[in-house]
Length: 56
Image 1 (spheres, rainbow, N blue to C red):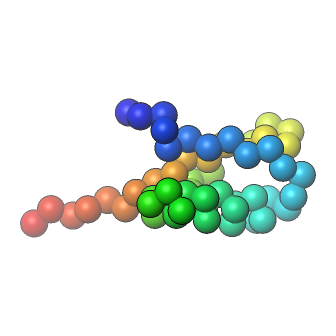
Image 2: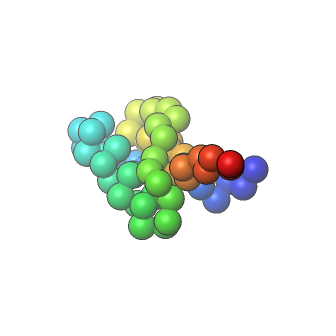
Image 3: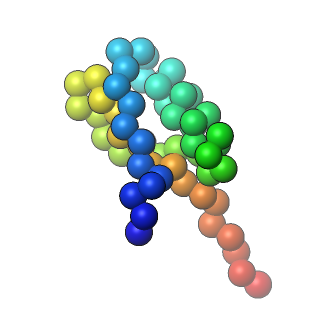
């Protein structure tokens, strides 16, 4: 698995604002959105995720 989809954001903003920023950042990189991983102090870790494609 590539680590290229991981994001570390250092922010003192409200958690929802950080999540919104992470989601926008991931979408700008052609992902579907962001998945929250962890928070330590002011550092939030996210993973950019792509939608699962159903094969028929």
